[in-house]
Structures are given as structure tokens and as C-alpha cells.
Length: 111
Image 1 (spheres, one colour):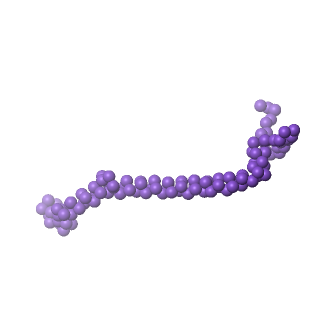
Image 2 (cartoon, rainbow, N blue to C red):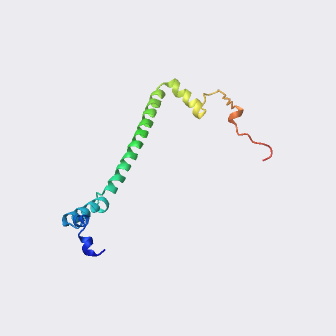
Image 3 (tube, helix red, strand yellow):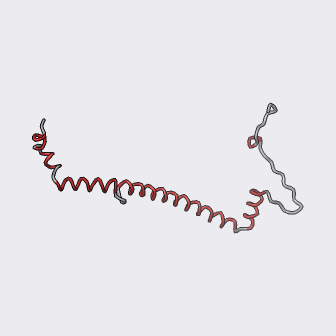
């Protein structure tokens, strides 16, 4: 097929039109090369979505901590927490820590 026959095809005439060529170049430039390209916008949208998920997670953590702090305003709860978490005791008081077998590290004599 010669170039003359190729030039006479309808789709070639449309594609070789100056305005269509400029439009194609413009679309390619905007999709891939521009600073506000579609690819960069997609990455930024993904980043925003990840940050919003992080925000929700941290907001739920803040809410839990606020509930905990509100609970610790009661002196009885604070004492209970200190005794359980940090094994604190009053003067002249003995504390016995009881551990169940299933919570202990089972070490054999072979080691």
C-alpha cells in the first residue's frame, strides 16, 4: 500500500488534522507531564485517603484516652490501676503475685 492511498483513508485525514494533533498533544501533556497531571493527582488523592484513615484511628485513640483519664479522676480507680499495673503497695503491706500455670513460660530441664 502506498503512502498516497494511506493518506486518503478517512481516519488518517481526521488524525492528521492540525487541531486534532494539538488536542492529542495537549491531552498527553496534561495526563502525564504537567505538574498537575492525572497521575500526580491520583497519588495525592491516595495520600489524602491514607491520612484520613490515620486521623480516624488517632481520633479513636484520643477518645479512649479521654475515657481513661476521666476514669482515673476517681481516687479508688487510680489506686486500683496503680496496684494492678505497677504493683504499688501501702506501707506495712505485703503483696503476693499469683500466676497461673498457663501464663508461665514452661521450661524443661533439658535446656
